[in-house]
Length: 202
Image (cartoon, rainbow, N blue to C red; front, side):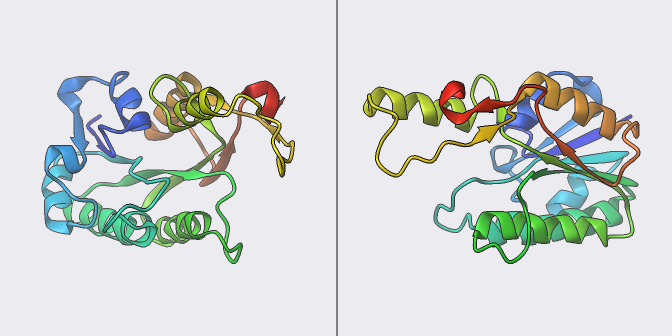
């Protein structure tokens, strides 16, 4: 099985690639010279692939890298490129709280991308992950920086909440199951086994 990974040099895409056969894996990212909304370049990269693991995404907007461009237009381009290349299946990485009309551009754009995949007519699985953590992730790096620069975490306005973070190794296991067609549901929530308060996680 030949797998294309969008966001293949990013945190999750890189971890996924490490568990696949390098000879049967195509990494697609800005670092490999392919922008997420370039249909022609994507189609060329997807040629000969059986499935696309659509891991590309951003957690903050910088310059031209907006939520609309990366999440919505990028997903639209991935779907069109997959059709052109004859790819039969897309596995999309989304976020647990992605939903419409919530006032968050991130969550709303992820939801819009999910809807594009669900309505694509292609075989698909949408994986709605909770927080994924591991070496090189945004969460651990961000929290580590915050704790080092703000010694007292319980600051004014801090609201305690519970989270169920997903270790990156578990996230990769779920992705591999979905890529290989072993996840029967079209949309599935993926959370960690352990529930922690945010302060305990920190």
